[in-house]
Amino acid sequence: MTNKYFDKLLAEISKTGKPNLEDSEYISQYFIPINSARNSILEEQDKIPEYLYFINSGFMRLFYYDQNGEEQTTFLCSQNGFIASFSSLINQTKATENVECISDCELLKISYVDAKQLVDKSAIFKNFFLVMFEKSISSATLRANDLASLNADQRYQKMIDQQAHFIQNIPLQYIASYLGIKPQSLSRIRKQAIK
Image (cartoon, rainbow, N blue to C red):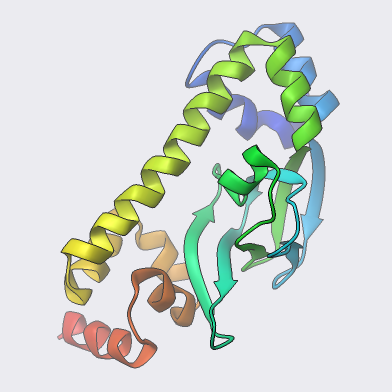
């Protein structure tokens, strides 16, 4: 497989097992390259999700509308990451979140149906998808723990330490929402951090 569009995905898969030539060919058969513009909604809340997305380049998020109609960001993702309303995709139930491109994005998408076929055909992909979904569950659990146990300053500092590229590339209102902080409070924290 020579298409460079798939190289990053192949590199990620190789972290959990060594794909053979057949496995590599499956990538180009089942994953569809797409370009999506900034602010595009790819999957909508209250609809059954169709696709899992791999980010070749760009930034994306999951968010939902709360009872007041305000956006609440629950997940941020960038290059070499996967994004979907994960539990809804696996269970084929109505999504509790929207999937949005924060920036212009180059993506590879695979449908739920095709992902199931791929898992049946390839042990490498079966293991890879299992690891990837475990990471998504772990990420959600860590975020919930941080919201419960860390104060606003600590949550922001942790993002600076571990995910500084988000702060540099994602609008502050999304960062604030993800960290569970009011935008004005985040502005105050940022000013204090600069001093």
